[in-house]
Length: 351
Image 1 (spheres, one colour):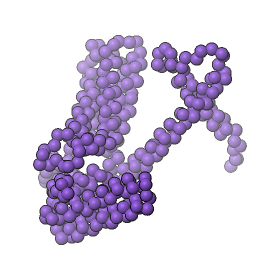
Image 2 (cartoon, helix red, strand yellow):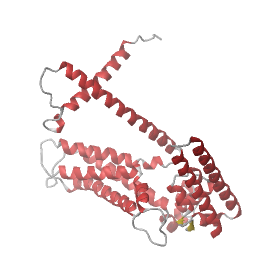
Image 3 (cartoon, helix red, strand yellow):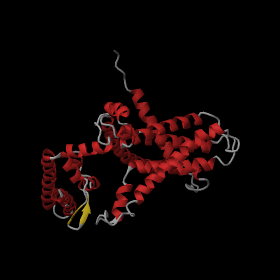
């Protein structure tokens, strides 16, 4: 069994090393980079073929091999976690890897939602200890807290001294939940620096830490935590309208709903739509950067021509009164207005 784990990790390591060599060599020699990339794909296929062979012999032993800690070339790691850390999707999406994850997720029960729920009567302790039940319970409670906070935002805002206990409970529940979620993400990220010597890999802790930070949900958690702190601090001072507090609370609600949408992102069917939305959002953000860059140039050109011969202080006074916002917003609305006028001017076909 140990030899099988070493062989699996050996081929996985070869795949990663050849892939890294291909990235480095592409800067100097494209032909050599393609050769490294082809050899990397060969080793990746060998990993999948080996998993097929081991799974046909004994499936439980294969699960133990994937989850066993082995050492190859002074690198100590578990094959399945090493593949996940270096984003080897073909290995992670292999039927054997999926079966291993189902066993962990459903705690050895049948990997089906309906049968999993029916097993609560027959195996209550097994169901309660499963990762699936914890995940489901977590997001059900999170959804309830979001609905409570949504109701709170529809009520008049007051300071903490003047607010009733009911409204305080509706508000503070989300703050506590957001803080605990942020602390959990922080502990997971700092876990790269705190490892047992027996299970520590030869990879540097800094790279592990950066891998933990490369997570959109953790970024949303940090943003929600900062918005929760700003919402709490803005409630301390009494004002007539509480406009600043409403803005912070509204942003916190929006990003909390986005974080709760993780339930749909990991679903077997709706997760595909999230993947398309992710890549579409990346291209949209890139386009927005280019558009803002061009709008600033055109806006300054128009302002310089239309403004009288006097000093134009772009960044003077309060930050919300800076002239740069006027330049960006006015030019953007002008572009939108031109597009709408063009669409209205187009002749419409009669049915």
